Amino acid sequence: MNHLIAEIKKRGRGVKSFKVFSNEEVYSLPTDLGNPKGYSSDYKLEDDEWFHIPVFSTTPYCLPLLKIDFVSTDYDQINSEQLKKLKYLCSYQIHNGIEHYFFQRILPSQIVEKKWFKLSNAPTLEKDSAVIVINSFADAIYIKSQDILYFKQLTSIAPIFKGISELYKEATQEETQAFLSYDFISVDGEYSADKVGKANRKRIALAKETLDSFQPEEKIKIFDYIKGYCVNLPFDEETSSFTISSEDELKNLLWGIEQRYYTTIIGEEKRVANSVSTVSE
Image: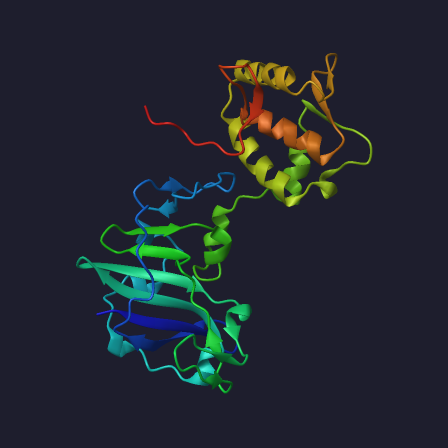
């Protein structure tokens, strides 16, 4: 049997669960979960791809309700006042005998308090009740038998799964300053760590991991690679350093460290990859 439960915001911290209704299939199960990607903040999903977290029940972000058997009688029926405090919905559904949990974050804009009428042969004006908008697809799907959480956007599920935002790697002010202090970087003009935006801080977090994995001779190769593609990025041969004076120049350097640049076989056109994924052999 299918059940929709809701988590509402309580006074102070935390949430409380209630049952909304039963016997309804709220969300459809996507047919494109077969090619999941490990989460990377710098990877852009294709339309038929999902991020996934395997053995999700062992992570600190897993909700207690996912670790126990679902019992609908554990939840009190929600009332109209509590519905106005919705934090997120969780639809427990059985598909082919397998337990699925569908999660949707509820934003204030999805609780609509306006006059409305239903499209029917006999429409009537409704004005005394709010409407809660349910998305076509859930923000996250947990398949219990697989112990896998699937999702599209980390920002959408971060308010549901406490602590999961740590997967979104972004360099701190200290890490950003340390990166700009590397001997192969020369900061010019008024540019500084204070002016590095969120996108480049995210790239710095990834680039630092990449650089730490390089041997000294590999660093020399990668710097030659960057010079070959980023001809407009100033490079001082005497100090063997790239001059960075803007967000764009830093972005180009970071893309180079991640080896995002490539040349097409046909036409020899130089391009940059928006996101990358390792190809299995």
